[in-house]
Image (tube, rainbow, N blue to C red; front, side, top):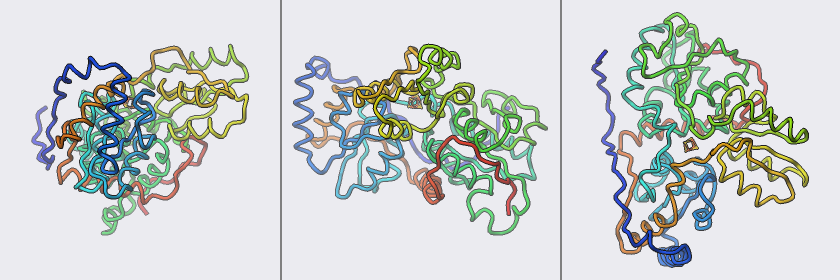
Length: 407
Ligand code: SF4
């Protein structure tokens, strides 16, 4: 069915990666390192390089800050007097950095092909259709959209404009609690929403949504999955109306590789080993694990563990190998031998980094990521609401359900 979905969608344009000049492919690693060092030195305090935990070590060596996507965007926003942020991560992260930094700061992604398969699973047209259909099926309910950081700026803006908030894997539970009370206060101030049942529409990672809602005490029967390629998201209208959580059918192609059998295998081989996984993993994997939490949580657990601790970790392989190297006093292995590497992150390499930096030295900004004004305004609203929500939360743990009607 074709609908007229009139909506201010901003003016963002997608730019494609131009071929890397051949010279950068011909340089040795040693030459690339020297040239990157030299460009960094010449750019001095005008430049900040951010490196996501999942980047390869060679790139991390040049990062001024290393962290997860949100930590890094905040770091960028805290810097004063900088002109350029080179974000060694993926597209949505560079967008978030552009949203959170001063408009004068220019954010650069070394390879524009570095996208995120999860973020690409929810686009604005699909979202507008889903919203219209949900509102038709649940006319007496208040639908609060919540989006994981791993989504496009356009989805964040839609969420901000419709009374919702962003979330990270660290604060997802706190944001969901806030959403279940009705979301943005300005939406509730006129009393029109009083007493209404609240329904969460969660983008784009069904697993983070399911794992967190379940840990909050909601049974799986209270959740439905929304498949954007199907009418009504592939749901029966009554079940849709009754659900507390509508989970967008998206997933991370890296974390989805871990399976419950991998946990069983580790338990069999290493009875003393603790299994720790990211909440983007499937429900069955999280249920079998000892601990589940965000990238920052996983790093903290390892840093705080005593020598001799044994871990099987279910997340991106570059981070696990780095943790293993940094903590030889512990035994750290990947939960499975599947190729659990983020191939899009992996597109950021020394040749691309060298190319963007040397262009900056010459006064040319290549691969800039710019978010238009409308999108920036509402995506900022979604992110600011998230920041205003109290508590960072231990992502996965037992809790009682909170009420979900508007006070
Ligand atoms: S690890 Fe998964 S969620 Fe993270 S950037 Fe890669 S595909 Fe996206």
